[in-house]
Image (cartoon, rainbow, N blue to C red; front, side, top):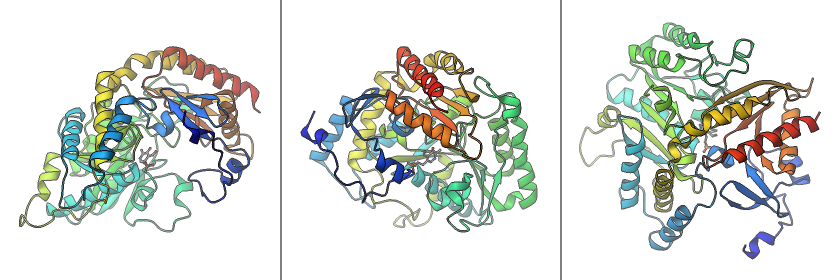
Length: 442
Ligand SMILES: Cc1ncc(COP(=O)(O)O)c(C=O)c1O
């Protein structure tokens, strides 16, 4: 371990931490200083089992040698190349490699640096596509209640998590939302896809009738909603959305920022559900979370629609200084190599039955009101403390960290998404830790 690991920051005040209870954290910091495979190391030298793949991103586990070496090598060889009107080979190689693992028909890739940027990029592609093909009246975007599509203005506009929206004014205009699919009264403790709620997709027909299809550019959903607390699509729901979008010439965008790259036991959620959207947004697992990167996949006809007009003209006025950055590209290629060598894009499918049984063994633990699972994703919903929503789950999070397990909470829901290299014994460890924690807290 390097000396840096022994250095405790002496003042925590300058860093305004994202999505964090800053004052609580700074009184009781949870500082991580190293990581390897399934574990973090804390500043006081404890090992913490990573039950969340960092933030749903470290799919291949931590500090994997191939990825680390690729970054080191690339940083010394070509640190940066302008992303506009210039290229470097790795970004092209990566795009080809990504297309190879993407669902059928996803033939082109636009690089971004995060999930939020991927979402805003996808929304812009959708609007611009409708316009270049002569349907410029299609300007509306449809999202869903409880959806999480990052934190940029496009993403929070189509998103449906109230706390992420209410402070920020009127957001994008011309956005509507479908209802969420969470039906705890009917589907509680379902293993995998719930039976009830597939017909909620028909709400899209109602929205189309209200606004008219000729005004709607795209629908965006997370195939499995993650950040809102793991909502698994009811049987038939996504196919129905696909059918309605196709019928009305509306683009369907799957936000696969967390489901992409093996989370459900298939390379993408589109593969899992056999429903192919028109655009897929990704980030996180594309570079194993090691370096910021996102990738938006589009179908050939969408890409090709832009390739018109004089050849010296820019076809799409959008992009980021770091789109396809060489070091991020090198990291992502090494990530894909690691996924391939270790079969990680499908390993979740082998572990899913064990994961499911282990999670559902918590059914009788104190205050558990629902358990949901799919692939290597899980959620344990807790009964909120009267008048103090989120407090019970937050106490569980803090207690679990003390006990050596990293879990994530959103509202009163514990959300789990371990690295795809997790072993069965570590699944047991994680579940036992949560059981002990639920017994120990109020
Ligand atoms: C479905 C989805 N979309 C977008 C994002 C935003 O990604 P980022 O935090 O990289 O901007 C997330 C992050 O969790 C996500 O889960």
